[in-house]
Image 1 (tube, one colour):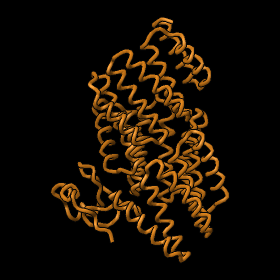
Image 2 (image 1 turned 60 degrees about the vertical axis):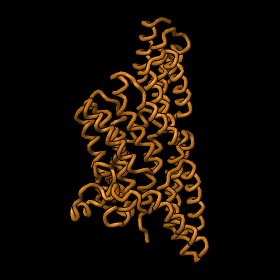
Image 3 (image 1 turned 30 degrees about the vertical axis):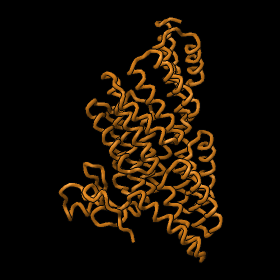
Image 4 (image 1 turned 180 degrees about the vertical axis):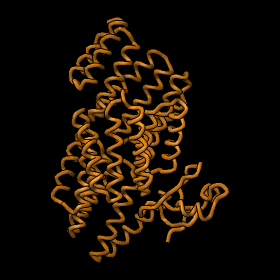
Length: 412
């Protein structure tokens, strides 16, 4: 199959894919992959297969095609193709929660000496790197990466990228418990979809609605959370977006837990776990176990709660997510205190304090914790985060954390 025919068949596959005929599209693209003699076409069809498998949640298949795409790019000896290949490899590992590998591949992308084409990918590279750092609970580097991605989006007038970064920033502030910002950023993403997204995939609308739903739940606006999550789930079901379905089911479960409807919560957690396990989202699985543990804890079933918290901890350690570990130690500490098991209690206290110190979750001005309760936060240009009220009342000549970088935080 020559260059023109390859191009025609790739376009045919794209039309089928956009009309939700995924299996037919995959069949067309696989045929192109087997028969084409055009390396550029081969690279492009591998890209189509990577995107399709990503949206279906088939991350191991996604990784397989990403590795094949790197080989194609090497054969072509083109730095632009190689940069795109490494970005897809980074994204595949991000989806599989191999966050250290993601960071490594992103750094490879940023060090490539390509043309302006690969420079335009740098925003997407920074976004993927930010998501990986967030997965590792390295908050300053995550925020730094997101801010770089936003600068690339603004400089290139890339509204789709800006939309995706806003959703990730929503997730960032959910984790640090500034729920006002956690709602602001996905609302901004939803505005971008309304203003510019006429020709975009509906997944952008679904993504912004999902992140709004999470923020609304945290703000205890449960009816708004349910409404946004239902809209997101509807689109995810229409498009066969398994990863988003899993996230929506998890959020539905959390909403039911907030309403103390534990029977419905357990059913949704179970449905979400089936998909999370199928697609290989280990961090998602850890979050589900944490939610199930909280359900049992609310019902005073302490031993059952501990069992699920331990499962969450095992997964969190596996992917390197220190914030999830911190939450487990905090909850376990309360349980062992209630059970009056002093040795286990001491062990959890030590582990909790180690996590707090490693995460640097404290305000460099007042020394109090960040991420313990809903508080307004503000980042300085260096991406260190402080309580907004501390910055307003004290003012700052530069960043106190940067000035005291060699000092240890003083936790009581």
